[in-house]
Each structure stands twice: as C-alpha cells, then as structure tokens.
Image 1 (cartoon, helix red, strand yellow):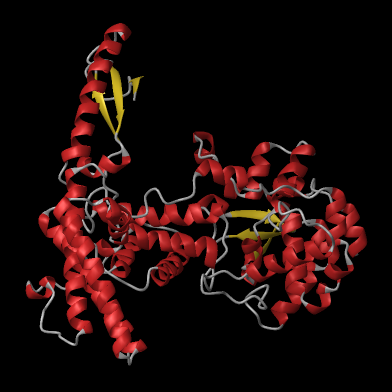
Image 2 (image 1 turned 180 degrees about the vertical axis):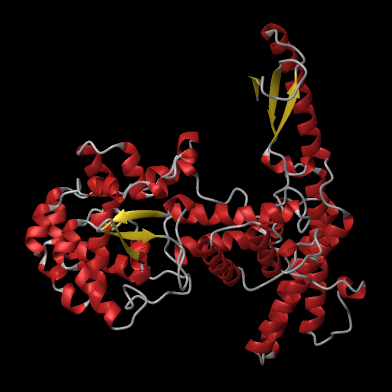
Length: 526
C-alpha cells in the first residue's frame, strides 16, 4: 500500500491518493482488479498519513472477512465441480476393468476389501468433519477446472471439502457394487441430468468461435498486410496448441498456458519472442472483452507473458560487425562460391551490407523497383507492385541509391540477366512462404555461414548490417537527416511532416550512401 500524489487525475483540485493492492486470491471479488485508488481529499501530508492508516485498517478488515467468509462459489458451481470429478473417477475405474480384465475371484475380493476400508475412513472423516487428508486433492480439483485457489480456512473451501468427501463416499459405494457386478445405482449427477463437462463449471460457453472473433478483430483493427498474414498464422498455431477451435469464452488460462509452453518448449522460440506473441494475443482478448464476447477483465492471457525485466536481461542485443569480421565472412571462400551456385544468397547479403536495408526489403525487390534519376540508379523500397510485398512501417518506404561498390561487383549485370529471362522478381529463387516472406532461407543460411567461419557471437546476424550502416555514416559525419532517409526511420516531427522527402535530389542521398566504405571487402570479391 502506498500514498501517491497524482495531480494529473481529473479532479477539481489536486489531492493525495492512497493505493491499496488487492491480494491475488481476492481479486475475483473486485472484477479482477489488482488495486484500488482512494482520494484522501487533502494535500497536507500529515493529514494524509492519518487517513492512509484509517483506510489501510479498513481494507485489511475487508480482506480478512472475505478470506474467512467470502462466497465465491455457488452451490450449483460446487455441485458441477464435484460431479465432474465423480464421473471422471467412475469412468477411469470402468476403463481399468474393461482393459485389464478378466479378473479371478481373488482379485475381485481384494479390490472390494480395499474399497470397503476406504469407505469406512471417508465415512469417519465426514462424521468428524476432518478434511485435512483431502486438502491437496481439493486444491488439485480447483486447479483442474481453472478456478482460483481458495483460502484453506474460508467457509467456501470447507464447504467444498465436505462436498468432495460426500462424492468420494458415493464413488466408493458405487465401486463396491460394480466390482460385485451390480450397475443398478446411478450417480447423482446423472440423476439430475447434469453431464460432466470439461468446461469450467462456473461458466457456460455461449460466445462465437475464437476463429470468428479473430477474423473480426483483424477486420476492425487495421494492420499492414504482412502483419495480418503473420497474425492469421499465429492464430492457427494458437488453436493447434489449445486443442482446436472453441468458443472464445470457453478458452481458459490453462489453454493459454499450454500455448505459452508450446512457444517455449515445442517450437523452441526465445522468451523475447514469447513475450511479443503473448502480448499480441492478449490484445485480441482485450478487444474481445470490449466487444462483449468475453466478460470484462477476464482476459485469459493476462499475466502469462514472460517478465520484461527477465527478458531484457536474457536478450542478446544485435551488434554491428567489426571491419575484421566483415572481411572474415564476406571474404570467405564459402561466401564467394555462392555467386555462381546461389546468386540470391550472394546479392541479398551484399545488398543488405551496402544499403543497410532489411533482408526482406532486398529479398522482395522487383525489376520495376530499380529506377534511375539523373543518371543515378536506385532502389525504390515500397510495398507497391505485383505480388505480396510488405514493409515494417510506413516510414520504411524510401529511395536508396545503389552503392558504387555493388555496381562494380556486377549487381546491375545480374539484374539485367534476370530481366532478360523474363522474371518480375529480382530474386525469383526466393518464393513467398505462408507468411508472405521470402528472405528467411537467406537469413538462416547466413547464420550457418557465420558459424562456419568461426563467428559464433549470437549478437551477429544479417540484420547487423543495418547497425553497420548507421555507425559507418555517423563516423563519416553524415547528417542525421540523411541517415534517417537511407535506413527508413522517421521521427514524426512537425519539421518532417512538412518536408517532402520523396522530392529530395537523388544526388544528396548518393553522397550519403557513398560515405559507407567497405573497400577491403570489395577488393577481395572483385
């Protein structure tokens, strides 16, 4: 608990505020809220301390009362929870008899004797109201139904324990009859017409399927085309992880935890990637809550993403190549051999090196994206054109002069040969994958190449060449505005909004890109 000065809150006058942290197990009483704010109606700090002590005392009394006497489960919910356990236990026992039989008289008699002994123990515990031996089982029962853990001293928990013992007593009685071959008795849940349901007993799923809500979400929340394709693919992976499509209000925290486990353990993705995917999925559920598809504050993904601080500590930042490392990888025989056998690898990597562009921006280039202005050839990096082309942001759209070193090494000759062959893509060897991306194979090959030449630092990847561009141009005293134009970063300032960047002379951009020098690499490759 803390007292905080919040002058920005919409009050008539400034005031000190008291923040009350709600214990995790009591948050369902407060519609899932994690904290409460209370205006102390004063700016005097001494008076605020006195009022804070008063509110702390009141809050603790409320929390203590809720822990001991709070009603969080209705009788119907308790019955559904216990009936589910009873039916599953009976089915499991019946499966054992079906698969493991036939049994001799001795086995059947031994089973009945054990059941009778257990029945006597449960009956005695019920008579004495002793639930201590069943606490762990009741906790597991709540967890299996994705319900919050109850305080063991609360009336709610004790009522559930007693109902569980009654169900256990019924189970043992029925099992004794069934081992004797009698199936006349029917479980109470079936007598009442209640079926054991895998859905959380307190909630009946009535909402639309997750896939339908996801389609509506992508329709109403605009995104870049490439992002939509990625999210659609991720929604399919989410459904695969949780066992298939189901009503969105039936998706539980356990389902979302299974999705998280699949990201980290099955698909072997990093915690950083896991955090991003979980936040993205959480955004969908938050939107679904606002649209009324799921109850307010019932986002099942919330709180499951890896902690940001942990991710930051474990995350390995990408760094630029040193001049020696650039010469090691681009001057290697393994890299030079790709020019004849796999030219898409050769030219995409050099294109990234001499433009600082992202690998997908180079990999998806089309013949029509190569222009000339005032005798200066340049790349028109844009999402426009035939096929599925994407850019990371709107600011990524730009013109980048083709570096003289690329021309010297024969890049335009390669482009002319591809054009003469009738291809629309500069790199027709790179087809689009299901996410609309084409350059992933080049990135993976480049990672293998780095290992092959002895550069095992995980911070070195093909994307490192973007860092080399910025560092190299800054070292050469290139104006910041020119660097931003070349690498596709926009600051959104008023000055930038009034500047017509697409009308800047190509000669200015040419002067900037030519400050990037990798003469030793060119000498080895020429």
